[in-house]
Length: 289
Picture 1: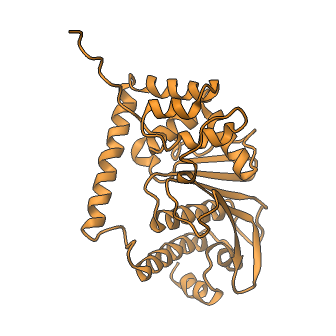
Picture 2 (picture 1 turned 90 degrees about the vertical axis):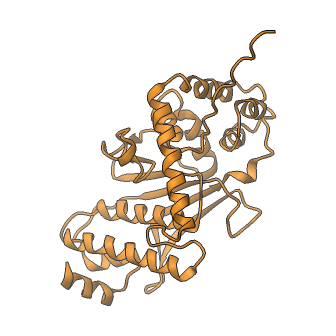
């Protein structure tokens, strides 16, 4: 009796490690670019990976955020949220504010720039259960004005779990492949689409890359540690089950970011617009900075 062929280990696209590896590879970035252009009307042509530390390939450092892109004065943050929660989405928004604030120049003047956050969410968690993607703009409550230069885009991948390629839905097919749980399922979703099948083949080849396998397993261990900490009641100041905990954690992060911006000489009005803190609150923080 012939020995049964060993089944290849499956590397999901929902993994931060896999996502970063595939996105940073010029041969496979098209997969994500097409999804982003279709759902969010953002063309990534001309954008480059930014910040060598954040996008270094160093696993420990790269956990701060997934992918940061830059073109001229414009920035795009792309996050793959396998274990999405309100805590995760708040953390991502803090990255958005940090990047937006970091683009400001010291002194009274600042350079006009645009910053966008894209969340790939492995969840149906959303306000409108019928929507696949939802976009947000920010509003300054005190002055009741919309902050047009900061955008948040969300796509809820579970909404696409029944999608199969039919000859005219390539972008939806690509997005649906992200939540597949096996290479066989990915091929079923691809249904003959050559570019989609190229991605499946590339993922399978990663199984032979020892460094990638190590990084992937490090991420799995880290996720288990985080989940264990949540069960024990520790979650970096956030408690997904308590609204007041979320609010307190978000507020603390806003204050931390505001202090750093004030230390860099960013005008109080600009810091208020980017963090949501009042002028009065920032005046007090400025005394501490």
